[in-house]
Length: 190
Ligand SMILES: [Zn+2]
Image (cartoon, rainbow, N blue to C red):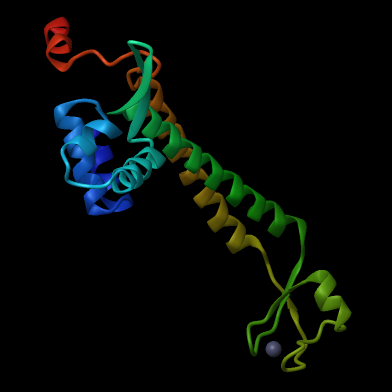
C-alpha cells in the first residue's frame, strides 16, 4: 500500500516535499527542530514542506512531551492518507449524485443550430425559441446523460469503497504517543 501512496504522492506534491517524505520514511520521525538543526533550510521552508505533506495525509504529527517540553514529530502513515482519499471519493460521489438529481428533476430543451441548452423555465420564458438564433427548441431526452452519470457514480462509489477498505486495514498509529524507535520496532515485530 505504501508503494501506491508514493506513486500518488509524486503527482500531488512538489519534488522537494517528496524528498522530505522519503527522508522521514527512511530515517524515522523528524521534528521541525531536527530539520532546522541540519542548517540546510529555514524554519518557514521546512514548515511549508511539512504542511504540504501533512495536507495529503501522508505524514501526521505526534505530540511529544519530554522534560516538560512539548514538541511535535512528523511520521509517515498510510491511515490518514487513505482517509483523506476516501473522503475525496465520497465528496465526488455526492457531487455527481447532486448533478444527476438536477438533471432528473428538470426538463431540458436545446437548439439544433447553436446547441444552446436551457431548462424548462428558461425555454418557457422565450416561448421555446432559441435566444441566439430564434430557432424552435426541442426537448432533450435525458437518457444518455443520465446513463453516463450513473456509470460515473458507480465508479466513484466503488473507488470510495476500495479506499475506505485500505483505510480500515491501515495500522492505527497512536499519534499522541511517542513513536517507537525504529530498531526496537523491528525487534518487536520479529
Ligand atoms: Zn440557437
